[in-house]
Image (cartoon, rainbow, N blue to C red; front, side, top):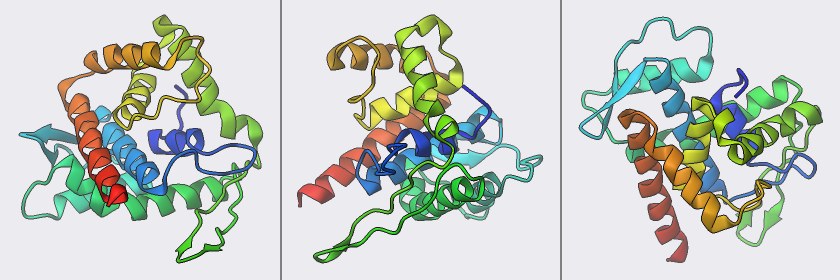
Length: 215
């Protein structure tokens, strides 16, 4: 995929570019953003998974990226290592705000505060300012899912995270939902073990979120 951060691509992909509405529950959106950031840090060699725990491998050269630096510092500052699911719970709200602010500051989307609905506030909306950039992650992912030979690692990671969260509806790829799940499952198995561990952590987080919602 393009050079945008995975979390930014995930954020844009999971919001309707016209209405700015999130396509999924806010809790699942947060989960997807954390998973995308952890996956990117694995791909750049800054973190890894050791016995199902997230560990820092190299804290140098994270670059000027505020989000990556924050996540690496957060992991490194702990006295012990924690699971992907634990980091999803800790980082979700912070990373959501970082990504949202970055997309607004970059002029890709605007932000409309959600209104009050009974005892809860409805999610903020992020309608596109730059429609081409806001819709690009979905266009790229749909193309690669239609033409698997064009799939790259970044696209595979995003597809695998969406599969782990069971978010496969709404993609125009020319196959039905069951076939699409199968294709994503095959792609996920091709990932290195650390990235598969992130996807597994996503699945555990999604199951926990679904249980909480049902209660």
